[in-house]
Image (cartoon, rainbow, N blue to C red; front, top):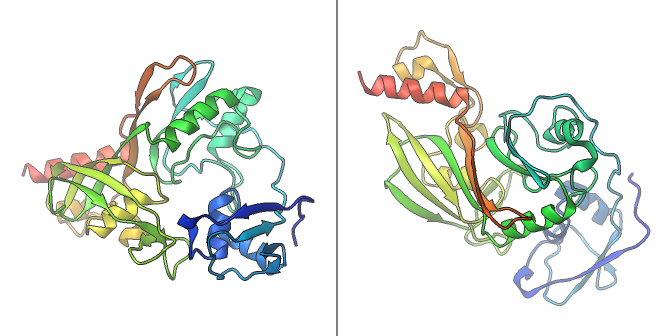
Length: 328
């Protein structure tokens, strides 16, 4: 089914992981593997809890020993692809890219080409860090496929470690811009709601207050402009959970515009803004979320750097229509 490495890896369940499912525990410790793939390893007998076989849904107890024989990670680097990159900043230690919407960061099932990793491999080749593994050269963090904006790339393992530590310590300041459906209840607020796996839909996350597997999540938001049924919002996530901003905004009743997964709408037309049913020109067909700014310390020179990416054309078009309709 899949090749296994020869040496087992042993983990001890921490008190903070009490009650976690075995598959969730392994997915947390081995993020390079999907939860589905790890379930297959468990079912195939590649995982033992206290020297006994386990099941994916087995609930763990602090102090238990979990031993896993991991499947091998493919050792091939992404195929270099001559894809233009919008470079916002570059030096010998790092590159900052303005990722376009629709681009997957690194190769994964169903997305083997057209990735940021492939473009980086073409433009920077062997000068990229290797800390993220062969399939993620230089990649320090990720953005969702349909989220545009600032993304950091390390050009050495030293820089990668320094930048990754800033993310882990939450000393990197991330600012996002979003267009949302609905009317935010406050002009500014901190959304403080834990996030975990959706109980029924594997590909989604959800607010999970009563689940021991959920993790704390905080997002500060500030309304920049209000429109009739829509708003422009500035967001500063204090934590970095999967789909955090999208889940939090959906929770307060103001999902990211055109976020099909969490908002139920896949596109918006000019006619919907102008209240003209005959005008079906599509202005936007991806989630209106943009990573606008990153503020961090240079990994080698320890000086502050603040990089900003301009708002992409599709979100600008929606914003212009909203402002034009409001002024009528």
